[in-house]
Image (cartoon, rainbow, N blue to C red; front, side, top):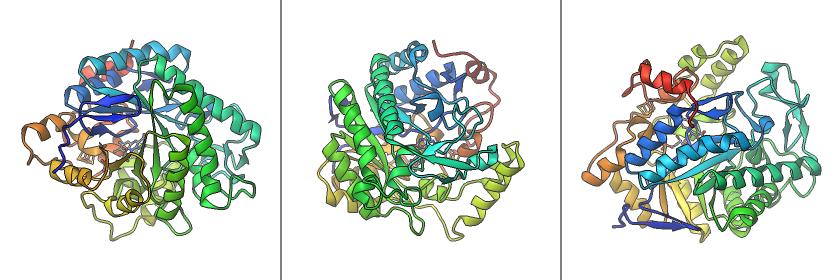
Length: 409
Ligand SMILES: Cc1cc2nc3c(=O)[nH]c(=O)nc-3n(C[C@H](O)[C@H](O)[C@H](O)COP(=O)(O)O)c2cc1C
Ligand code: SF4
């Protein structure tokens, strides 16, 4: 059987083992700069044995933010992110920055334009809650600007000491708004077939690769499927993967689901919408969570490795490096996935539950995560302490709250 503790090389970077902490929005930023709590969280993950940790998620511009407080990797942020990358490197791990543009998935009122932009125009589903009713179809000039923003952010990530960048092309963010037929209704060469819908994300990746590919590993997170009728399918994901392989991606992280239409697909288990609703002030956002609850399939129950069937189909279709993600809780199943040809194992919740998980896997190959896949950590994301597992941690820890109030550097 494969050894998950063997080193792996991804582009210009070698990881000490195959375990990568997935991008899982920590909500540990203040004025769009990382806090001391974010630094300590990633230091602990590195101490806990991961080969690489992923810092989530950094916007490529102020208009690219999903949340008003979200980190933006601009010039002033570089020393703060450098403090985090140095803390991780001291523990022998690597660190990747997940970089995003929200497109029309914007949950704040600070946009510099009247309308949010997306692959296509039409009703702005998120904007409605903030009085923005329509979104704007991106022009060539908008697309060129976004390419330049991704490139500049990746260059600053290299300057700040990151080892990799992960371009977020899943879950309904801007690049996914191009890939998914749910949001891409364009009639030009960027819409229609799966190949056309993957064209702009592949152009962004190719530009980032040209700019920093010798210094950073270039990863992309894509959806295996959206999981709802008329959404992207595994066949679409295969076309996307081929386009990204040709554009020079060093590895793809395979996920599923869209934040608005099918968020349960991201997790393979229902979300605690009642708890999430309580964390939101506005009546409209409460209504949104009630609708999300109603649209979750009643029969949904969590299974470990819940994306493996779909991931296998993609594994069979391309030669490039692929990382398995989704419901990893035990070392033997992770190693079985490596035996099937996946190159790395990406984990979110089991590492939110216990940042020391990988050391425990190494000390005891039969160790099993205690994460229950209840997704209460997703609700906690919206609270003052940022993301944590309420099953294992005390949110009211005064030291943590103090660290949330201080910037990283
Ligand atoms: C609290 C929380 C926050 C998350 N935030 C992000 C994010 O910022 N970016 C992202 O790509 N995925 C995010 N995810 C999804 C995870 O990265 C991962 O795709 C999903 O949880 C399935 O992996 P798992 O079964 O190992 O948890 C988040 C997950 C959790 C639990
Ligand atoms: S709250 Fe804790 S136990 Fe529940 S899914 Fe999140 S990490 Fe796992």
